[in-house]
Length: 465
View 1: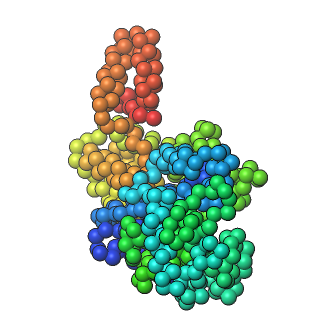
View 2: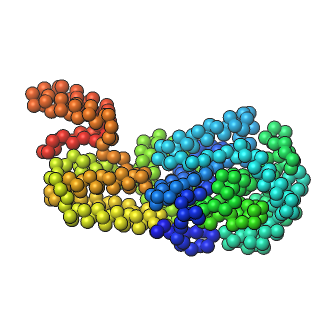
């Protein structure tokens, strides 16, 4: 039974898809004005864990992720480089998905760009104008917050206490009330991107983009919407207002927000030297798998303090998993199954599943994994593990990887295996013939194939690094 903290209610609630079959989920994607930093990826890794766990329930999933490829910052940077909007944003969109792949983040079913959906946004604004919930002023169009009485229920903000420039985006446009937010922006610069439409010449506001695209692909009401806590207000609050005002239906059943990431105990800031892109960390020699592990290790609703000590510890944890699977796969085991080891696996599996069902408690889920590793290592030393135990444990680690994406199998399965086995056999023969030069040459061939070998009393063990 999956339970998630629903920001809308503030409570831990049982989640099932509305139709009992398909989870329809919208994930706020990147604003592609630059490379994504590790704070961004803390959120994207969380949404990936959520996606993986949902699939483990046997439900189908329809995940939509937007690409915000038009906003003030993007326009400013594109104009500074004297390139068109699509040329500028393509670079950072491609980089985002390259980085996501390095971190093992699965691709959503639908990836939608804001600039490809201008007609859908215009239609939504037109609907709000016809209902007199939106109004035109100075060539721009605004949402009238006073016409939506439940505004603020997601973030629990009292609109009477909102201050311009503090909690409300001033938008740099005229409007009836400081609480109102822009839906459609009139162009202010000669070279600024714009669209000619029946609601006027201009471009969409950021909040409008997500409402139009999410409802186009997921319907007027859908199961879940994810984002970082920084998006709760005003972005998600405004999404609810404009969507529900237009349709008269509940917009989203579950709102799920992840907490911020700090670096060395500080807010990420270039001026403080605490701002890191994923690429910065990889250039420093860190394995993306270790970076992902650190991002996974703290439950999504708790702040994560990203430190280099923590990153080294994450790398060590990954090594512990790899070494355990290497040892397990290469051990000489008797046939059959040991009941005690089987019980250890069943307990770990149960604790792992229960932890992820409990608001994606990844810390407790990982504890179950390492408790099993410690206990089974002891059993391997004692010689009590059997062949069936090995098969079941390896199968479970495949499942752990499908759910958390932090396991790199001790040896890859496939065509390379036979070649490795052949080289190891040749090396064994060379050593037996005391042809150590040839044995060393074969070892180097294996190293070049990213194969790590270990000579033990039971024979030579190997794994892909």
